[in-house]
Length: 296
Image (cartoon, rainbow, N blue to C red; front, side, top):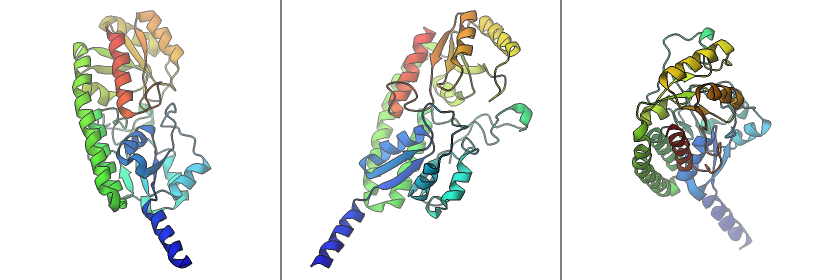
Protein backbone atom coordinates (compact mmCIF):
# COMPACT_ATOMS: atom_id res chain seq x y z
CA UNK A 1 0.00 0.00 0.00
CA UNK A 2 2.85 2.38 0.85
CA UNK A 3 4.39 1.72 -2.57
CA UNK A 4 1.07 2.37 -4.34
CA UNK A 5 0.58 5.57 -2.35
CA UNK A 6 4.10 6.72 -3.26
CA UNK A 7 3.50 6.04 -6.97
CA UNK A 8 0.20 7.92 -6.87
CA UNK A 9 1.91 10.90 -5.26
CA UNK A 10 4.69 10.77 -7.83
CA UNK A 11 2.19 10.62 -10.71
CA UNK A 12 0.25 13.57 -9.30
CA UNK A 13 3.47 15.58 -8.97
CA UNK A 14 4.37 14.86 -12.59
CA UNK A 15 0.91 15.76 -13.86
CA UNK A 16 0.97 19.11 -12.04
CA UNK A 17 4.61 19.98 -12.75
CA UNK A 18 4.93 23.34 -14.44
CA UNK A 19 6.95 24.00 -17.54
CA UNK A 20 10.30 25.60 -16.80
CA UNK A 21 10.58 28.46 -19.28
CA UNK A 22 13.52 30.80 -19.84
CA UNK A 23 13.10 34.01 -21.85
CA UNK A 24 16.10 36.05 -22.85
CA UNK A 25 14.17 39.34 -22.80
CA UNK A 26 11.24 40.70 -20.76
CA UNK A 27 8.95 41.16 -23.78
CA UNK A 28 9.19 37.46 -24.62
CA UNK A 29 8.62 36.64 -20.96
CA UNK A 30 5.49 38.78 -20.89
CA UNK A 31 4.10 37.01 -23.96
CA UNK A 32 4.97 33.64 -22.41
CA UNK A 33 2.97 34.55 -19.30
CA UNK A 34 -0.02 35.44 -21.46
CA UNK A 35 0.12 32.03 -23.11
CA UNK A 36 1.32 29.88 -20.23
CA UNK A 37 -0.61 31.36 -17.33
CA UNK A 38 -0.27 29.25 -14.19
CA UNK A 39 1.08 26.27 -16.14
CA UNK A 40 4.60 27.70 -16.34
CA UNK A 41 7.43 28.98 -14.17
CA UNK A 42 9.52 31.57 -15.99
CA UNK A 43 13.00 33.03 -15.61
CA UNK A 44 13.85 36.22 -17.52
CA UNK A 45 17.54 36.81 -18.17
CA UNK A 46 17.63 40.51 -19.08
CA UNK A 47 16.20 43.23 -16.84
CA UNK A 48 13.55 45.53 -18.36
CA UNK A 49 15.78 48.58 -17.82
CA UNK A 50 18.92 46.88 -19.16
CA UNK A 51 20.43 47.35 -22.61
CA UNK A 52 19.63 44.00 -24.29
CA UNK A 53 22.85 44.17 -26.30
CA UNK A 54 24.94 44.03 -23.12
CA UNK A 55 23.44 41.75 -20.48
CA UNK A 56 25.61 40.70 -17.55
CA UNK A 57 25.74 36.91 -17.69
CA UNK A 58 25.41 35.29 -14.27
CA UNK A 59 26.01 31.69 -13.13
CA UNK A 60 22.32 31.48 -12.23
CA UNK A 61 21.51 31.92 -15.94
CA UNK A 62 23.37 28.71 -16.76
CA UNK A 63 21.43 26.85 -14.07
CA UNK A 64 18.11 28.18 -15.40
CA UNK A 65 19.00 27.19 -18.97
CA UNK A 66 20.15 23.75 -17.85
CA UNK A 67 16.76 23.15 -16.20
CA UNK A 68 14.66 24.72 -18.95
CA UNK A 69 11.96 22.87 -20.86
CA UNK A 70 11.57 25.85 -23.21
CA UNK A 71 13.87 28.72 -24.21
CA UNK A 72 12.53 31.81 -25.97
CA UNK A 73 15.12 33.99 -27.70
CA UNK A 74 15.09 36.50 -30.55
CA UNK A 75 17.20 34.68 -33.09
CA UNK A 76 18.18 37.96 -34.77
CA UNK A 77 21.57 38.53 -33.10
CA UNK A 78 20.37 40.90 -30.36
CA UNK A 79 21.59 38.44 -27.70
CA UNK A 80 24.56 37.19 -29.72
CA UNK A 81 27.11 38.79 -27.42
CA UNK A 82 26.03 36.94 -24.28
CA UNK A 83 23.61 34.04 -24.93
CA UNK A 84 25.78 31.51 -26.86
CA UNK A 85 28.34 31.00 -24.05
CA UNK A 86 25.51 30.44 -21.57
CA UNK A 87 23.94 27.80 -23.82
CA UNK A 88 27.28 26.10 -24.32
CA UNK A 89 27.75 25.80 -20.56
CA UNK A 90 24.15 24.72 -19.93
CA UNK A 91 24.36 21.76 -22.34
CA UNK A 92 20.60 21.23 -22.47
CA UNK A 93 19.55 19.39 -25.66
CA UNK A 94 15.86 20.16 -25.03
CA UNK A 95 16.43 23.79 -26.00
CA UNK A 96 18.75 23.27 -28.98
CA UNK A 97 17.82 24.96 -32.24
CA UNK A 98 15.13 23.00 -34.06
CA UNK A 99 13.81 21.29 -30.95
CA UNK A 100 10.19 21.85 -29.74
CA UNK A 101 11.61 23.51 -26.62
CA UNK A 102 13.33 26.30 -28.59
CA UNK A 103 11.20 29.28 -29.60
CA UNK A 104 12.97 31.61 -32.03
CA UNK A 105 10.87 34.76 -31.88
CA UNK A 106 12.00 36.11 -35.26
CA UNK A 107 10.92 32.98 -37.13
CA UNK A 108 8.71 33.92 -40.06
CA UNK A 109 9.09 37.67 -39.42
CA UNK A 110 10.24 40.04 -42.14
CA UNK A 111 13.07 41.94 -40.49
CA UNK A 112 13.55 45.60 -41.38
CA UNK A 113 16.78 47.49 -42.09
CA UNK A 114 18.79 44.53 -43.34
CA UNK A 115 22.24 46.00 -44.12
CA UNK A 116 23.87 45.47 -47.49
CA UNK A 117 27.36 45.78 -46.04
CA UNK A 118 28.29 45.10 -42.41
CA UNK A 119 31.53 46.65 -41.16
CA UNK A 120 32.76 47.97 -37.82
CA UNK A 121 32.53 51.47 -39.25
CA UNK A 122 28.75 51.10 -39.42
CA UNK A 123 28.47 50.75 -35.63
CA UNK A 124 26.35 48.16 -33.84
CA UNK A 125 24.56 46.92 -36.97
CA UNK A 126 22.91 43.49 -37.05
CA UNK A 127 23.54 41.48 -40.21
CA UNK A 128 20.12 39.81 -40.16
CA UNK A 129 18.18 43.07 -39.76
CA UNK A 130 16.89 45.21 -36.92
CA UNK A 131 16.16 42.89 -33.96
CA UNK A 132 13.84 45.22 -32.00
CA UNK A 133 10.69 43.81 -33.60
CA UNK A 134 8.48 42.86 -30.65
CA UNK A 135 7.22 46.43 -30.10
CA UNK A 136 4.97 45.91 -33.12
CA UNK A 137 1.79 44.36 -31.64
CA UNK A 138 1.05 42.37 -34.79
CA UNK A 139 4.50 40.79 -34.59
CA UNK A 140 3.88 40.18 -30.87
CA UNK A 141 0.85 38.09 -31.85
CA UNK A 142 3.03 35.96 -34.13
CA UNK A 143 5.58 35.45 -31.34
CA UNK A 144 2.81 34.46 -28.93
CA UNK A 145 1.59 31.90 -31.49
CA UNK A 146 5.12 30.44 -31.72
CA UNK A 147 5.18 30.21 -27.93
CA UNK A 148 1.77 28.52 -27.76
CA UNK A 149 2.82 25.94 -30.34
CA UNK A 150 6.01 25.17 -28.43
CA UNK A 151 4.27 24.86 -25.07
CA UNK A 152 1.64 22.58 -26.63
CA UNK A 153 4.32 20.36 -28.18
CA UNK A 154 6.33 20.09 -24.97
CA UNK A 155 3.33 19.80 -22.64
CA UNK A 156 0.63 18.06 -24.69
CA UNK A 157 -1.87 17.53 -21.80
CA UNK A 158 -2.22 21.31 -21.48
CA UNK A 159 -2.14 22.10 -25.21
CA UNK A 160 -5.76 23.26 -25.31
CA UNK A 161 -5.12 25.69 -22.46
CA UNK A 162 -2.13 27.23 -24.21
CA UNK A 163 -4.02 27.66 -27.47
CA UNK A 164 -7.04 29.14 -25.67
CA UNK A 165 -4.80 31.61 -23.83
CA UNK A 166 -3.21 32.60 -27.13
CA UNK A 167 -6.63 33.19 -28.70
CA UNK A 168 -7.58 35.41 -25.77
CA UNK A 169 -4.37 37.43 -26.17
CA UNK A 170 -4.91 37.67 -29.92
CA UNK A 171 -8.42 39.05 -29.39
CA UNK A 172 -7.12 41.59 -26.88
CA UNK A 173 -4.44 42.82 -29.28
CA UNK A 174 -6.91 43.04 -32.15
CA UNK A 175 -9.21 45.23 -30.08
CA UNK A 176 -6.39 47.39 -28.77
CA UNK A 177 -4.93 47.91 -32.25
CA UNK A 178 -8.00 49.92 -33.19
CA UNK A 179 -7.69 51.99 -30.02
CA UNK A 180 -3.95 52.58 -30.47
CA UNK A 181 -4.34 53.32 -34.18
CA UNK A 182 -7.06 55.88 -33.52
CA UNK A 183 -4.92 57.62 -30.92
CA UNK A 184 -1.91 57.78 -33.25
CA UNK A 185 -3.78 58.72 -36.44
CA UNK A 186 -3.65 62.53 -35.91
CA UNK A 187 0.15 62.32 -35.90
CA UNK A 188 0.57 60.30 -39.10
CA UNK A 189 3.89 61.00 -40.86
CA UNK A 190 5.20 63.22 -38.07
CA UNK A 191 8.93 62.92 -37.40
CA UNK A 192 10.21 61.79 -34.02
CA UNK A 193 13.84 61.59 -32.89
CA UNK A 194 15.15 58.51 -31.07
CA UNK A 195 18.35 57.97 -29.14
CA UNK A 196 18.96 54.51 -30.68
CA UNK A 197 17.43 52.81 -33.71
CA UNK A 198 15.12 50.59 -31.65
CA UNK A 199 11.81 51.68 -33.13
CA UNK A 200 11.40 51.03 -36.89
CA UNK A 201 8.70 48.42 -36.31
CA UNK A 202 6.74 50.67 -33.93
CA UNK A 203 7.06 53.57 -36.39
CA UNK A 204 5.90 51.39 -39.28
CA UNK A 205 2.91 50.06 -37.36
CA UNK A 206 1.68 53.45 -36.18
CA UNK A 207 2.53 55.62 -39.18
CA UNK A 208 5.21 57.93 -37.80
CA UNK A 209 8.77 58.63 -38.96
CA UNK A 210 11.74 57.81 -36.75
CA UNK A 211 14.85 58.34 -38.85
CA UNK A 212 16.88 60.88 -36.88
CA UNK A 213 18.98 59.52 -34.01
CA UNK A 214 21.07 61.02 -31.24
CA UNK A 215 23.60 58.29 -31.89
CA UNK A 216 25.55 59.03 -35.09
CA UNK A 217 25.62 55.28 -35.72
CA UNK A 218 24.02 52.45 -33.70
CA UNK A 219 25.89 52.00 -30.43
CA UNK A 220 28.23 54.96 -31.03
CA UNK A 221 27.99 57.72 -28.36
CA UNK A 222 26.70 61.10 -29.59
CA UNK A 223 29.37 63.64 -30.51
CA UNK A 224 28.91 67.43 -30.23
CA UNK A 225 29.15 67.79 -34.02
CA UNK A 226 26.50 65.15 -34.62
CA UNK A 227 24.17 66.65 -32.01
CA UNK A 228 24.52 70.07 -33.66
CA UNK A 229 23.43 68.47 -36.92
CA UNK A 230 20.50 66.77 -35.20
CA UNK A 231 19.40 70.08 -33.67
CA UNK A 232 19.42 71.73 -37.09
CA UNK A 233 17.40 68.88 -38.59
CA UNK A 234 14.88 69.02 -35.75
CA UNK A 235 14.41 72.76 -36.13
CA UNK A 236 13.94 72.43 -39.87
CA UNK A 237 11.39 69.65 -39.50
CA UNK A 238 9.72 71.07 -36.37
CA UNK A 239 10.26 67.81 -34.48
CA UNK A 240 8.41 67.79 -31.17
CA UNK A 241 9.60 64.61 -29.45
CA UNK A 242 12.79 62.74 -28.56
CA UNK A 243 12.25 59.20 -27.31
CA UNK A 244 14.74 57.85 -24.78
CA UNK A 245 15.03 54.40 -23.20
CA UNK A 246 15.91 53.77 -19.53
CA UNK A 247 19.56 52.90 -20.16
CA UNK A 248 20.31 55.92 -22.38
CA UNK A 249 21.85 59.21 -21.25
CA UNK A 250 18.75 61.31 -20.67
CA UNK A 251 20.78 64.46 -20.04
CA UNK A 252 21.96 64.48 -23.65
CA UNK A 253 18.36 64.24 -24.86
CA UNK A 254 17.35 67.03 -22.48
CA UNK A 255 20.05 69.31 -23.87
CA UNK A 256 18.85 68.69 -27.42
CA UNK A 257 15.25 69.21 -26.34
CA UNK A 258 16.17 72.49 -24.69
CA UNK A 259 17.80 73.69 -27.90
CA UNK A 260 14.85 72.74 -30.10
CA UNK A 261 11.76 73.11 -27.94
CA UNK A 262 11.02 69.38 -28.20
CA UNK A 263 9.95 67.15 -25.33
CA UNK A 264 11.86 64.16 -24.01
CA UNK A 265 9.57 61.12 -24.04
CA UNK A 266 10.26 58.13 -21.81
CA UNK A 267 10.08 54.97 -23.88
CA UNK A 268 10.98 51.34 -23.21
CA UNK A 269 11.06 48.19 -25.30
CA UNK A 270 10.18 45.93 -22.42
CA UNK A 271 7.28 45.50 -20.01
CA UNK A 272 8.46 46.78 -16.64
CA UNK A 273 10.80 49.31 -18.22
CA UNK A 274 8.37 52.12 -17.35
CA UNK A 275 6.08 52.36 -14.33
CA UNK A 276 2.70 50.74 -14.80
CA UNK A 277 3.82 48.49 -17.66
CA UNK A 278 3.84 45.03 -16.12
CA UNK A 279 2.22 43.47 -19.22
CA UNK A 280 2.79 43.81 -22.94
CA UNK A 281 -0.54 45.55 -23.52
CA UNK A 282 0.11 48.05 -20.74
CA UNK A 283 3.52 48.77 -22.23
CA UNK A 284 2.05 49.70 -25.62
CA UNK A 285 -0.68 51.69 -23.83
CA UNK A 286 2.03 53.70 -22.09
CA UNK A 287 4.12 54.23 -25.23
CA UNK A 288 1.14 55.50 -27.18
CA UNK A 289 0.02 57.73 -24.31
CA UNK A 290 3.48 59.19 -23.73
CA UNK A 291 4.11 59.89 -27.39
CA UNK A 292 0.73 61.34 -28.27
CA UNK A 293 0.95 63.63 -25.24
CA UNK A 294 4.29 64.99 -26.49
CA UNK A 295 3.14 65.41 -30.09
CA UNK A 296 0.00 67.40 -29.32
